[in-house]
Length: 355
Ligand SMILES: Nc1ncnc2c1ncn2[C@@H]1O[C@H](COP(=O)(O)OP(=O)(O)OP(=O)(O)O)[C@@H](O)[C@H]1O
Ligand SMILES: [Mg+2]
Image (cartoon, rainbow, N blue to C red; front, side):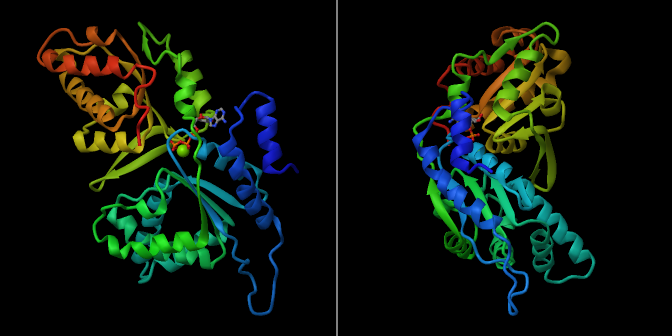
């Protein structure tokens, strides 16, 4: 079995990764956890099954620095039951499980739900921890307390330092103990690499594909494969109690077709939430827009505005160049701004200063 430094070095040697001092520096932290969880759990008379506490790792930093990539390397190297899950998806599962437990008459639902998570894994690896929702903010403290008590080791990536989680959130004072808990149970580490690799990977690449039929699909598939390794899950966002599903999502990168996002009855709040949850959107098959698909066109304008504001990168395939997408019918005037934004968003360094 190779250690993580060796695994990383092999990937650098094969040309898969560029060597990065900041990434190399955090490898011993992951290795510490990997080695510790590999030890058999000691059974003593007073603590029969709860493993000894091992500090987890809270890896934070700017976008595209390689946090998710390093976490994936770590998870793939583990030989104990582990789960890598998007934080948001995990919290949704927790809410569903708690709802079910309550329906079965359990009053304090956090305890059994946390226990069943702890029974199935030794390591939980969360991608993109961020807390924006008060329903999450109010339960994470007790949930994580139970998980840690049960000996679960937590590793997480985030764009924020723990003290800034749920910043300016409602009832934040009730959330603060969770921050203390995280700092107590996990080492906090900033991945301070100067390189945004996601941006670098796109540098010089075409990001707006004009196609008559489906010719751009292979090019887009190659970009998707490069950014995500081809592994993806649907991302379900709950927005004001409604669920909006993005068909494929991994490591901040989402992929959808025009009709998935603009053919459904979505409004500005939905598009803002999508833009916020995603760092790069691949949007395929944008058709020519006109009177006949006026509602879709209007939603597309709203979507582009939301992506633009959030500095979410966009890769897309469309039936025409931005200026030629919407040339007749009501709304063409408003579309000029959208076309101009679509142009601007193609610039190599666009979105560079994103969150
Ligand atoms: N050292 C490296 N050499 C080459 N590519 C890299 C390197 N590190 C990361 N990448 C690639 O750069 C892209 C972005 O990395 P990753 O998704 O891990 O960033 P991140 O820090 O998680 O960003 P975010 O905060 O936006 O989630 C991925 O496609 C990843 O494989
Ligand atoms: Mg990431």
